[in-house]
Image (cartoon, rainbow, N blue to C red; front, side, top):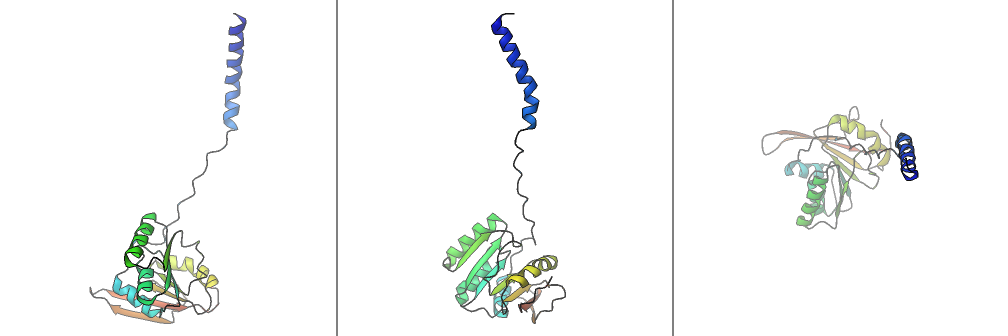
Length: 196
């Protein structure tokens, strides 16, 4: 065997012996961030219900309305268009956020509202004076300690259809909508007490 062949053979053998060790020390593959769990299926709130929710919360131009699970943005858009309120919509679905932004532009209120692609469980709601929800009761209960910790006293929470466990609402609005469907809205007012 020539010296050139012997050198290639030795280098090749060394490479094969070192390969498993090198593979074992390779950097681990980056882990994908788990997707945020949905707090409710997407079901648009009928406009008639949106209007009643904002009326129940007594929204004015001085309010900042946060809609957690904003869908197509109709609640904060309506608050901006009808009352001049500022609004923030939060949703985990990028398609809903794009739709919300397009709807806000079409309504001419893009200067009053913004939308966040974010998990509602992680959003800072402390600037809100009104929070609107159309989630599930279990989701409302998950959010309750966050809302009651972050919201200032006097802030209002309005939920379409679902309660917050043993936290009694200050007001309930039951009505039959134009399609003959029975609707219930619940209003709570933050009083500074953190509720687990």
